[in-house]
Image (cartoon, rainbow, N blue to C red; front, side, top):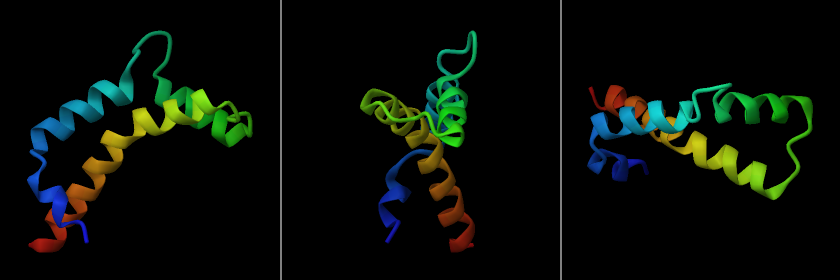
Length: 73
């Protein structure tokens, strides 16, 4: 089911997760801000929801790839 993740280079996913997960770095990363908004129940604007998905996707893909790599061993 997750075989397609094998074709994504691991270093590329690590870089994307670091940069998109942390961008913008100051005053706080968007991912942290949007997760806080989600936990507080204030994540309701479509743009904020898109922003959460956009910034979390590389991290999610990285986790899926690492789980698949570990499972294959």
